Image (cartoon, rainbow, N blue to C red; front, side, top):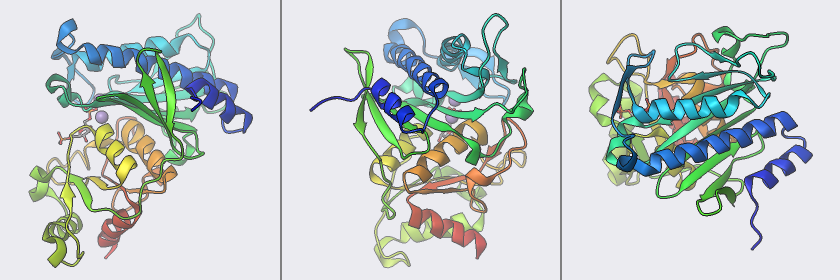
Length: 332
Ligand code: AHG
Ligand code: MN
Ligand code: MN
């Protein structure tokens, strides 16, 4: 069968009016950075990239060497192409404005350079998450404020998984498409068009060690799920928690499921663990584009008005009927 590479796919998306030439270039450059990160991650202990960097990010989390390396790779790859006005990252306090000397473009790029960092040193899948917004008109040097746009404004979103194979999942608002890295050729090949999340599922994903901090609706749902066939939901469920959102979401995109990092009372300053701008929003766009749903329990994630660049939100996403059920319990 004839193979469709990422470049051909994007050119066809451009012809169909789904992406501009600049957005196409931007996505190609992100994909190139993803390949470089995949190589760095893949070397593991051979190249001394495992372990702590010694630094902390703005959120007080210890940075791993690969968090810093992946961030650098994305910055360097995207600085000079002329398609971006600025970039924001989990690993940087403030946005990175395109240095003088390079032309500026009309887009803003946000990323979680390496998601699932606690899994790096134990050889479990990690990934990169990204989101693209338009830079507001007339803004030369974007600040954090210019990034604070609702998830519905995203022009593109995607993630990669560095697992047994490297996958790149992408949406530009016209469904969700999956690519696999052909390592010998160094190119991404379209391997799944129009990925759809089944509306029903028997698989759930939550870190139950936080159970005592959950709110009543989530406690209720998990109790019902655990009750299985004889409980109110009338079926047995299975549980999976990788600890890398990219891997958990990828499983859900592939075969359905519900993923929850709900609001908890563990730390009053953190109403959830995951970050809105570069984790929850891009994943919510992908999940909705694949027919699933994504809420905080109270609200649709994509409708939230961001308040801060590094804001955290509760996340409940995946198979639509299951997410609707948990969201319904929050309203009951
Ligand atoms: P990051 O490595 O970018 O900080 O994100 C980690 C996130 C997410 O990938 C995962 O779902 C969650 O943290 C795991 O949290 P727990 O360690 O609390 O299970
Ligand atoms: Mn993350
Ligand atoms: Mn990260």
